[in-house]
Image 1 (cartoon, one colour):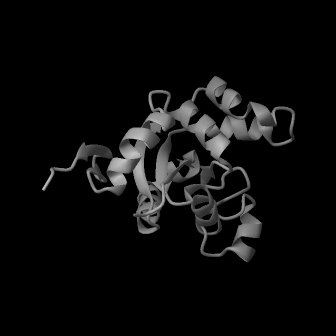
Image 2 (cartoon, helix red, strand yellow):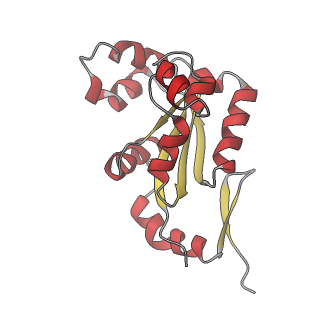
Length: 175
């Protein structure tokens, strides 16, 4: 049996969501890289949401620019699952700094789609703890512990299937 899946938060930022073809390409990259989309939603933040999410960066030189950008338009948030999901998503995104990404990870999302260090297309959790906190922020109705106990073993056993079109899940019929 496969190892237990790990969850991570992935966000497609407003710069990418503003371009439907780019958004579709990024969605496909997620699927092509063996991630399971556990939850997904499109949303728009108010400035206060952005300030709360990025509070740890308050006072840093990029904080205001980041807060304004992240509340400038729609974004898409995902709860992704796979073995070692956090590392795999971060590798797929590439370095935060777009210039560095283009030179060190040219196949990464940020190298291919990023515009600046703020408008770098994606966000991803950097640890298990931040994944749980960030998932709770974006998906307050989703409980990581419940998913890990109830849905994750059923998914690995082939008893839950996620509908990639509707981004919902159903119990698979027993055969």
